[in-house]
Length: 89
Image (tube, rainbow, N blue to C red):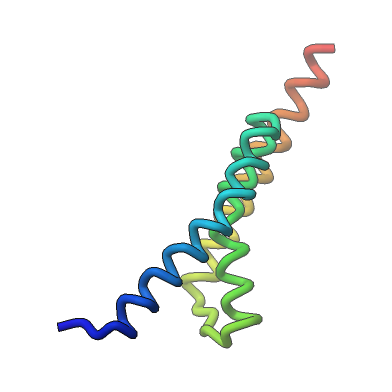
């Protein structure tokens, strides 16, 4: 059976996470789709780096490689979009 402390902790964590995502989602709605999609994609590598810096989580070779691939994919997407805008002019 869960104690009162457990339920208070669960409610506190859920409400604090929800309150953090409200301004984030509002900002994403106001940004152009191109920018918002890159922000969402880069959230994962950024969270890996921040967890390493702030929480002393290990940065394994798998995390480094997968984060590098995600960033590389975002860069390729950015470069291809930039080239298509130049060619369209």
